[in-house]
Image (cartoon, rainbow over all chains, first blue to last red; front, side, top):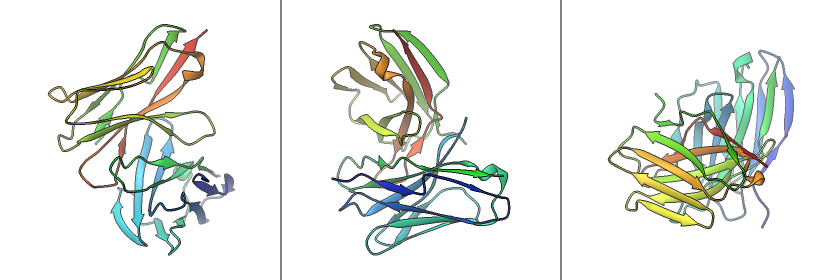
Length: 113
Length: 112
C-alpha cells in the first residue's frame, strides 16, 4: 500500500508570492489533515478535510487555505508569503476507524526568502 | 495556548538504559493520546497510543503510562537502542474530532 505522498518536497519562494502544496493520501483514506512544523513550535494544526469538506480549522490567518478533491487528494495554498511561513508542511491521512492514527507524508519544506 | 507540553527539548541516554519521555496536557477533554517518532527528512511515524480508560499500554520495548489526575503521560523505552535516536512527539485528541494536538517534541539521543 503506497504511503502519503507530498509534492514538492522542497521549494523556495520569495516574500509576497504564493505557493500550492499537494498531498495524495493512502488509498481508501478519506480524511486529510495539514500541519506546519517549525523549530520550537512542534506541529501546529492547520486544517482537516473529509469528503471535500473542511471539518476542522486551526488558528492560522486566512492566507492559509486548502481544499480536497473527490479522489481525496488535497492541496493547501499560502498566499502573500511571509518569512515566518518558512516551515515543514506535513500532510497526514486517516482511515477514520477506531484508532484514528494519523499517517504522515515526508513533508514539503518551504523556504521563504 | 500550548495544550500539550513537552518540557524537555532534549534527552541523552546510554544504550541499554531506560529512556523516559514526559508530556503534560491541560485540556481535560482529551481522551486519546499518541506518541510519534520523527527522523530528519521524514514525516512523523506512529509509535504507540493509549485511551483515557487505561493507565498503561505496552508494545515491545515501548510502554506508555497515563496519569489522568495529573494530566501527565510518559513514554518508556527499554532497552534504548541507537536507532531510537529521533524526535518524539506527544499528541492528544478528543472524541471523534480529527484535530490532533501535538507537543513541541523531545529530541532523544541514545549514545552507543
